[in-house]
Image 1: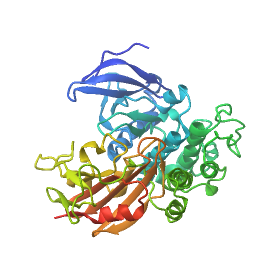
Image 2: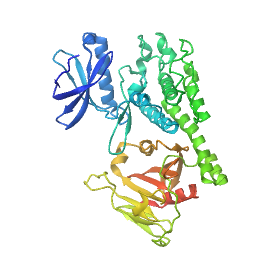
Image 3: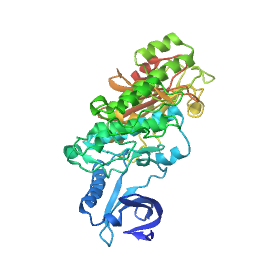
Image 4: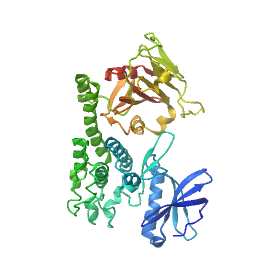
Length: 461
């Protein structure tokens, strides 16, 4: 294959990959002053109008959805020989296939990653799109200011649900493809992607000696191999349901699969957190009530140190944002780093803690970050904002909702094996001011009541 030196206005650097339908090149974009990935239709398909249209459909679909859980399209164009190409955001972290080739991920990290993948597929399902080919090679990673992002890619086989029953070609990868995708007369819907998610889960969590696709046949699909030690029984049950041979026996879509996975993982995490904390009675009550469990940074020191006690009724302020301080806590900070308002100034934020200066670096110090962002409220919901903040090495508890201080909060808590033992994430809307965000590492031994008391003290003037 001869490498082109330029594609349109882009300077080609090297080949990223080649498949049956397209070739992908890494290139430099002088306008963006950065690297991009350019996907070009393969020469042998350039005269097939059906394949050409499918290629363009992918670019149009990604451009229309324009979501940070999907690979973004910057532009489309056409080579001198008539072949179309799409300019995509470059996933500089490679693919899940690359990572799995280096060895298995820790079980907790694998479950968290599967949760992120399901969130991306849920975006497609909300827009009436079925991916049809969920494989490790189609899950990409991109670095960014807020950390690494998991991206769902390669929608060349995706199709609007309204036309799903009209597909007659075999579409999908054996081992990940739902049984009905091998039947030209079957209706293929979101449940086919649920099957693919289940098979990705098997690949992430299965025993390495049981290859994906073992004992596959047309009627029953691949058998579910033994999972690794340490995987919660509830997670295994979720994967078994997701990979059921009959679509009617699976979860209806990616969102339902993700909810079931989170519930199963949280049940295991809640019990582990209770055992570690050494307060079984209190922790059992919290777990049974679906207490907190999203992955925050649980710090574990006592409130009140050499800084002295904060008077009852003390309040921290940053612009219109105020926070009632727990006894012995202080406030510091005047802005949210990296978050700018319409006036070009930093949006308001505070760190509250017995020792605000040590909170971020010392997992033994409890505290919280509290921020208010109008820009974030325009682009996402409280639920969506929390979903952007996974704690890959931690176990999530069921998300709960609570109304405190006139704000409807979404609260998630995480139990972590190292560093901060508990991290709580909370977000809510303070209309019309913006989205409120709190990341809390509560004092050891405190629970839901401490979290709710802090949230109740967060106000916008």
